[in-house]
Amino acid sequence: MDYYQAPLIPSAFIWRRAHSLSGLWLVLFLIEHLIVNSQAALFIGDDGSGFVTAVNSIKDLPYLPVIEIFLLGMPLFIHGVWGIKYLLTSESNSLPTDGSTVSLPQFARNHAYTWQRITSWILLFGIVAHVIHMRIIQYPESAQLGAHHYYMSRLNTDNGLYTLSRRLGVDLYDKNQIQQMNEQMTKQSMAFEHSTVNDPNHLIAVQKSQETKAWLNAIEKRPLNENQVIAVSNSFGVAELLMVRDSFKDPIIILLYTGLVLAACFHAFNGLWTFLITWGISLTARSQKLMRKIAVSLMILITFLGLSAIWGTYWLNLNH
Image 1 (cartoon, rainbow, N blue to C red):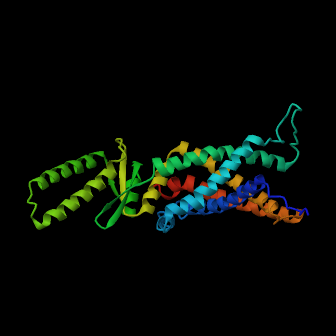
Image 2: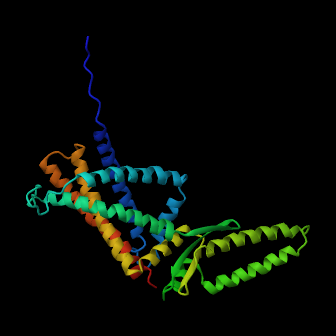
Image 3: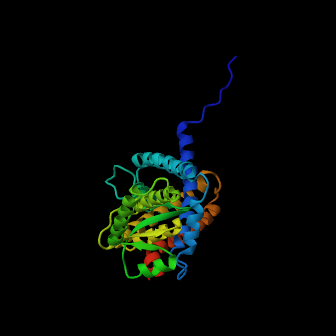
């Protein structure tokens, strides 16, 4: 007797749903990320304390590397890989054509689909550049001195930096000061070589010397130009705040990140609207119209928060 066997779910369907779900998770992350960043700019006169508190809370999460890999890295990977396939196989139907392909520019959703593909390319390269810039090139170094952790950021000097550093409790070291500390460390090392090993204070002094050397090595890890300093803070959030402030002094960085935020917010919330349709949450024309208004409103709000962090961190809140 032959039994009916239900067809297996096509793998393409599963991957499309994984792409859709990972996109929803990334929309939530984008909202959280830009809300945190905006606190470096919006609370004018507050020295970015909201940003510092939020960043330190995230930094103190248990198993943070595991969280970043599985709750951020994996969704990005899944969404990115399947998104690249979309980019290579999809065709726009809103651009001018010679007649060999379909062109229906009179429909707004066709333009939205085209921009979804364009912003995909921007995000593909922009996110990689963002990670390299903020998590590798500019990411604060760290070292332990005694019972405290210290974080070091390389900054370009400006008129307001020294005033701000005093308010934030940050120490600034220029190239000459670091060289003087190196010379002092060399003299201490020579003194230890001639000290008595049996001296009860010898081991304590050696340990302190090793910790100071590691601290100094962290400071020297990134060489300085004449107009640069190393900012040292016992707060990771403060070091990150100064790093963000320093980045958004550069007009080129401001323009690049502005484009990235605009692309990310359009891609995220246009994708959110299509997610609601794809998963059967918004089916009727009325509900789709309502959800589109909500998605656009969220897009405008989160875009404002993202742009405020870019344009306001240095130029409004933390200039002096």
